[in-house]
Length: 64
Figure (cartoon, rainbow, N blue to C red):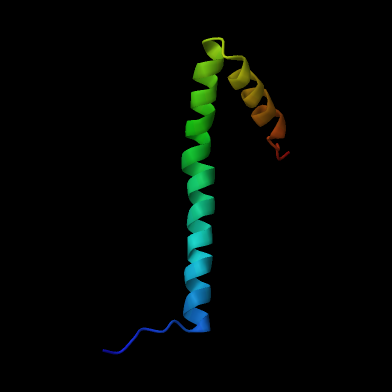
């Protein structure tokens, strides 16, 4: 049985694609979900969620 060997280029492509996938999922899927969850908890009176939401809002960069 012949073993499968990844070359440097195919390994580089796999790592790069996985990195872009993780960045995309964090920025467009997890981040909005996390902020909605913090907002819901903050509205119910959770002090930690209020602080996390305040930090998240202050960290946003506006492009003018």
